[in-house]
Length: 235
Image (cartoon, rainbow, N blue to C red):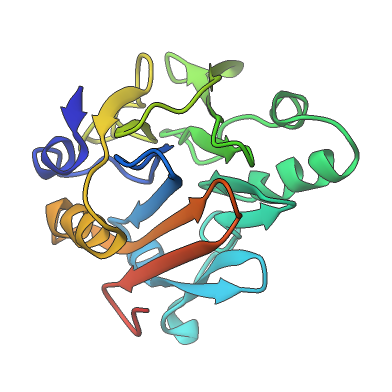
């Protein structure tokens, strides 16, 4: 098991990342989502709360050149289930769940982002109301857009202090290499404030933009969250 903070501290550019898991005390499910950026358009973003989660928005609307892949709802909560993704597939998953279908059904209709030559993977996660969780990555086959590789990982029972992390990229590069292999097993420790600020401090200072961490008491559904933005307000 890797320490999530140390895992991130040594990676200059994982891109956008998701970690899902369970607190050390075994009572609270944990969801982490962060964004990083290298271009001016990507770096011009912050997180803000919505009625059912968070959305990205332009920090300076005058500098927003292309909203298609940077403005979306990363987190939406539906009937005690927490959806976390790096794009508008959040809404696809929510719509499928509302229609009685599942996480996998939704993502079989989607593929990687249309941003050649990178073809950024779509990473997605879902925490069920009982704390079990799922992760997925949709990526091109060896950077060939003719084939989408869809991988799904399901964790049937949460284990106290354990989470799993997935990101769009392995590390920095030109283009950055897509995440490879299974989600990384990571340690989740500390209270919400300490954990969130530990993750934020570990992210590369030049590239990090925003972080969201949510905890939900499995027995009651009561939740708390933290937003940290490099630009603008943090909450």
